[in-house]
Image (cartoon, rainbow over all chains, first blue to last red; front, side, top):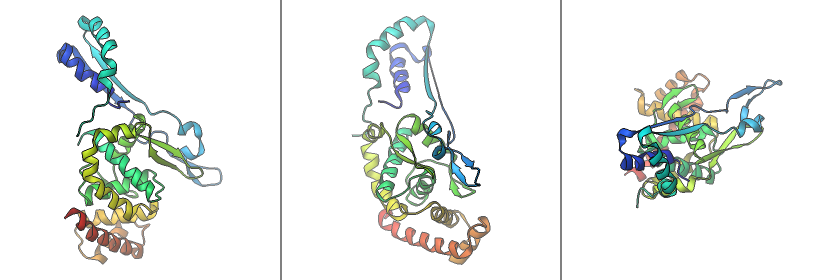
Length: 95
Length: 180
């Protein structure tokens, strides 16, 4: 599993199709997410996560996009299908 | 430092804190990361400000959220208290990307985990504030720094601030053996 899979796809696609035909964007939820203080009926202050298993398991939103120019879209889709596994395989960055 | 490189160090810090019996909530990570960066010169690149309960980095909070999204850490609810951070399903993947970085800073991480790992939130707040005032304040003497802490954080009595300053001076002294 590669936490920067989108970036890896963008880098490899830039080599294949040219950077001018691509755009990269990403969004990650900011802040502490669903962990916030809750004042209980008996005047204690508790963590929301300690009080709710639902909140404790809400996934954090993290999205990466790689956009391609419509002129290379068909080729890019085919290329991605056959190279995806190799591209997103985590590579050691230090030996 | 790249984001995942920094994450590899943070997850290593979490592992070392756990080994020392730390609760490992966000406050524990915030305060020990502050020591790691400002005392042990580990270039994490976070911007710490003196917030309500001592040095705090909004960037680090966002980073921990991002790490949760990537599965590098996970939150373990511990009712009736808050949640603890634990290494997540991709933590090993990220650590394997940066073996040299981890090796380079393991002594610093281990030192901080040993010295602060057993601390609770209140004591970590005092110690981190003491370090903040020591490194960034104008006051040099032990008493002057303690008074400054109590002035900045009125909920910390001067006596406890004094103890925190003395402990921080001890940690700073001992850190020289690692920093050279």
